[in-house]
Image 1: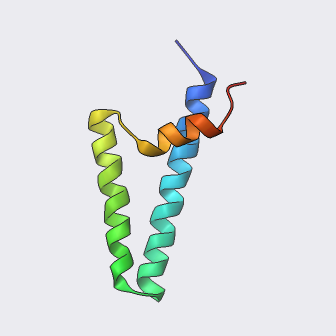
Image 2 (image 1 turned 180 degrees about the vertical axis):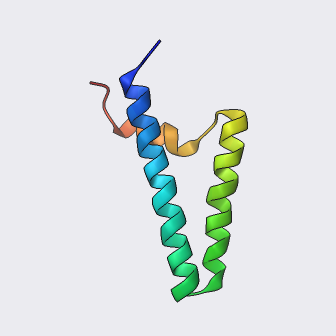
Length: 68
């Protein structure tokens, strides 16, 4: 069954992941290479959530974004 709310939540999660990756890459390039570990963390979290369907950000977004 199609649910527009689920699509909205997943769109927000993908945006956050993209922003986190780009910001951590920029911080790694301009500030300190240790920020690349954050990029790796985001990537590993995306991989594990594809297998387990558990995403901490999804729980936060579902609490913050109202169902309309």
